[in-house]
Image (cartoon, rainbow, N blue to C red):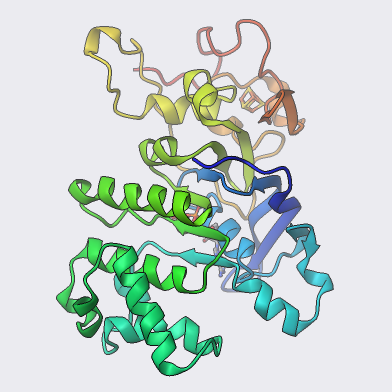
Length: 339
Ligand SMILES: Nc1ncnc2c1ncn2[C@@H]1O[C@H](COP(=O)(O)OP(=O)(O)OP(=O)(O)O)[C@@H](O)[C@H]1O
Ligand code: SF4
Ligand SMILES: [Mg+2]
């Protein structure tokens, strides 16, 4: 984890992304007002259940998805205010890697052709220079130069994921969004790939936004974590204090669902289980959107939306009761689901 600089590499305020439903009769509120900074050199984790809006945040950060409203500054620059030519150059600094290496690699292209493709598209040097840089990138992620002559079906999942990392690195990005990048890998090689990410961060001073629904992955690699639910952030803060003492009931529930490394007699005696499906982002619950699954919900949670506030320096939360003495250490008052 690198030293952190003052200026955020990305600064997002009140970001909203909406999509029309297929029949165009309603609107999916995929991101419904999130604000955060990503600091240069850090790993910023985003966690949440399926459909909470994580990928949409990641795609927006790297200019693949235009915001419906809100502002986004990269190194203090508002992308909306610069020319198309400058934007093309600017975009190269912000890259994304997705979960499925098979979908991201063209089966008919050799590995080296895939890795050098972004360089060619960016008209960055002659064909032989692009090729040399692609081979160097493959070596940097631990793949032999001969791998470049092979095709995707001849590589393992872990090797293909390394190829995608090499491809993203050829443009020398400053920020890399990693969207579920180890989810498709065997447990046995996840550690190796995560270590590779850490090594590359040290060597290149990279900033990561690490998106996952796997709490053990995000807590292992992140300096700070945002917990996302139905298009909003519920909690955000430094990893260690958040893992030790979550402020939001949703974070508490996610943590309790994790397999515990502790021996059984030291584990939390009651396991909190989130009941029911995540509600629809077309019509999220009134007031606090987590209330239909919150074991601590009170009548005012249905009528008043919690304010996103900085409870202690660097720790943000959206819950009326967070920080009140005794909150979350009491018995459930509503929707209890302890087992
Ligand atoms: N292009 C699109 N058109 C319509 N709806 C979309 C589009 N992209 C995302 N959505 C919807 O926006 C919501 C958030 O989707 P998103 O993919 O960001 O969630 P996620 O947190 O990444 O989920 P997962 O963990 O399953 O990857 C979902 O309800 C999804 O169906
Ligand atoms: S505001 Fe109410 S429903 Fe929302 S997390 Fe807090 S206690 Fe639960
Ligand atoms: Mg996703």
